[in-house]
Image (cartoon, rainbow, N blue to C red; front, side, top):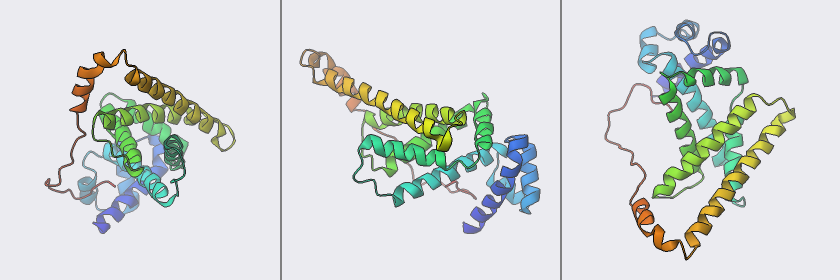
Length: 228
């Protein structure tokens, strides 16, 4: 697997020099294969959908860097909201070229690639919560990730247009978005604790309590190249 991973990294590294000009395209993929000297048959086996899988591999590389930084950091004394802010900042700082990110955003905005982009976004937010030790086993598993997806995507788009020194405007924007989420969460808690509303919430709360997060299967066959 290490050999395959090394070859995949070579192709991805070669592709990044062309993405800013040609985007995540078949042309970029073919040129990356040539530049990396990886056999075309092996490259096609690792990235069967070509540019789509290549763009997702780049996204996964950023996720892996974020997780590594989170695991190495001492976040024990931080509030949950500050841990989330740190994770989002680490993920954005893992992007070393804004133009590549702009090309990716454009690529995954296309109707035929939007489902892959949405899954990649969800996977990033799931990794953040999982790495931070989230143990929710009910509907909160979904709401946490859905809320974080909205915050992260908004901050990412803001960062793409941010020209402030060291992205200070982006981090301030991030804090404001999290403050807004926390106000909503506080309002939800007040509604749940309101004795006048509790009788009306019994059935909805029971129904939501039956929802469980998805379970990963471990009995499926592997692939030649498994993204990080």
